[in-house]
View 1 (tube, rainbow, N blue to C red):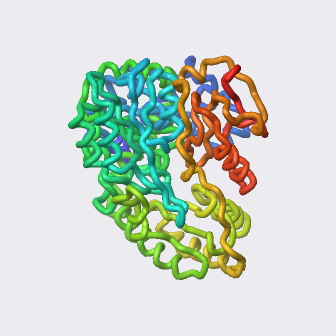
View 2 (view 1 turned 90 degrees about the horizontal axis):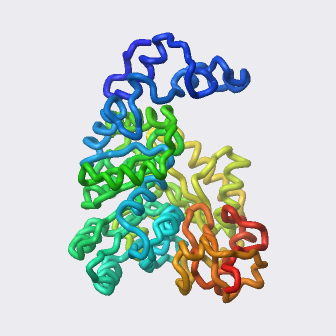
View 3 (view 1 turned 90 degrees about the vertical axis):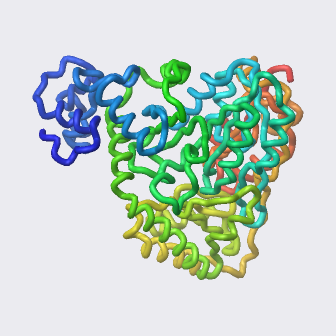
Length: 484
C-alpha cells in the first residue's frame, strides 16, 4: 500500500505502509491482522481495520517512549495546538487529567477546582490523596444552565489558601453546554499566586480552528490542557490529547505510564494523527459551522415553544464566551422535559442529541452537520407541533441550585473506608463513600467524604422520576462510610 493521501499524517502513513508489506503475524493482537477474527465481526468491519490494529512493531514506535512516528505525530499536534509538548492519550481526557493531578499534586496537598468539575477530577483527588477546595458556580434557573467560575471567587479563595505549597488549580473550559468563563484572567490570577493551572478542555479541541470560537486554554496561558479529540473532532472514541505549555516534564511521563495502557490501540493513536491533520485542513468548514450555529439559534427561537439562547448566554453567571457549535434548545415552554424531547426526536425523527436535562437538549455541530441543518430544523418544528404549548412549563429541582455539602473526610479517605449500602431514606446525615454523578453532564452532586443531606436525596429522586440516571447506582441504595 502506498502512502498517497497520507502526507502530513506520519503515524497513519506508517501503519498503512506496514499493512502493505505482507508480514506474517506471530505477535499480538490475537486476531493476527484479521486472519483469526470472528468471521461475522470481520465481515462487518472490513479487512483494513484488522490490518491496522497493530502493536509495537519495527517502524511503528512505542507510546511509552516515542522516538519515531508517534513522536513525530505528537510534535505535529503540539505545533498546531500551540503546545510545548503534546501527548497522545488512549484512555480519554480522563487519562490526561489524572496524570497531571498525580504529577503536580499529591497526598495532603490542595486542589482548587469548580464544584461542577467532571467526575474524572474527583477521581484524581481519590488517586492522588489531595484535598479539594471547591469553587462555587452559579446557574441560571430560567435557562436551567450551569454557569462558570467567576474570577473574583477564584482570587478570593487563592488568597485564603496562600501558603508555601501552592494548590493546583483545575478549571473547566468550556462546560458541557459550551459555556466559557474569563479563562485568560483566571489563569493570570492563579499564576500570580504561584499556582499551576490544569484546564479540562475536553469539549474544546476545535477552538484552535477559528477565532469565532472561544480562546483555547493554551492561548489563555494554561500550563496543561486535556482535550477529548473524539468529542468534536473526528478521532475515535477514547482518543485524546494532553497539551503541556512546557516540554520535558518527566513527572508527567511517569504519571502517564500509570494511567495509560501499556498496549495502546494503534487505531486510536492514528485517529489522533488524522484528526489533527483534518482540523488543520478544514478550518474554513469550522468557520462555516460557527456561522451555522448562530443562524440556527435564530431560526429555532422563532418556533413557538422553543428557545435556543445566543447572546442571552452572557446573562448566565460567569459566562464570557460560548461555543457557537454547541446548540442548546430549551423546551420548557412546550411543557415537556429535555429527556422527553430527546426521546421524541429519536423515535419519531431518528435524530440523536448529545445530551438532555430537565429543561434542554444539546446538539453538537461539526463540518459533517453542514448538510443536515434542514432535517434538524424539521425535527424541531415537528416536535413543537406535536406538543401542546398550552401546558404549563414544569418546575423541578435542579442539582445546580443545591448547597455545597459539608466535607468530613477527603475523597480518598472515604473511598477506601469500610462501607455499607443503605436505602436513600436512611442516608441523611451519613458520609458518602461514592461519587454520585448524574450523567450527562457528569457533574457530581455528592462526592466521597461529604455529608449527605435531604436536598441532595430529593433531587436524585426527582432526577430519576424525570428520566435521568447516574452510572453505578444500585436502585434505591447509596454507599456510605460504615459507622458514620
